[in-house]
Image 1 (cartoon, rainbow, N blue to C red):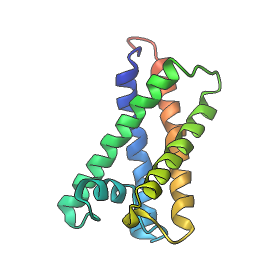
Image 2: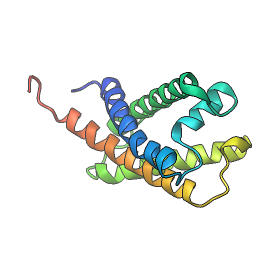
Image 3: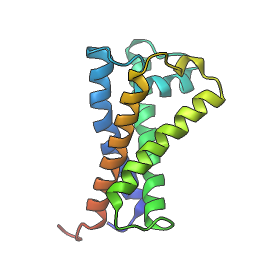
Image 4: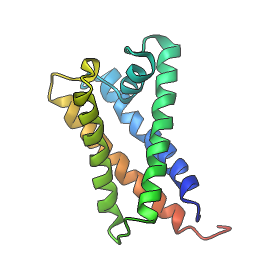
Length: 150
């Protein structure tokens, strides 16, 4: 598949959805995280934590759309300005950079609802973000090298 935009949408959708599964389990079932990824999207969309089925569903949808947008950004960057044979390392770095960027935005704009007090939230969120970047690059690599008609 030669279209980096479409590859990014597909890779972002899959990687974002897969990333949300362990996030949901660690947040809702095991309570190892105060905030889920959709809480971030919900605070930006509603100016407060999402509550109730409709708001949480909308926040999850916003978060997946964000993951798709980040996927597009990645495939465009990986296609043109950043060419490397070490695509797995690129994906790991990209996922970590996204986490760092979002964390910086939260601190700069003093989004207190999204600032956690424990150590487990940033560590788990970082690991899931790096896993997202890795999965994003693997999916993009497979789509890019896929033969037409197969």
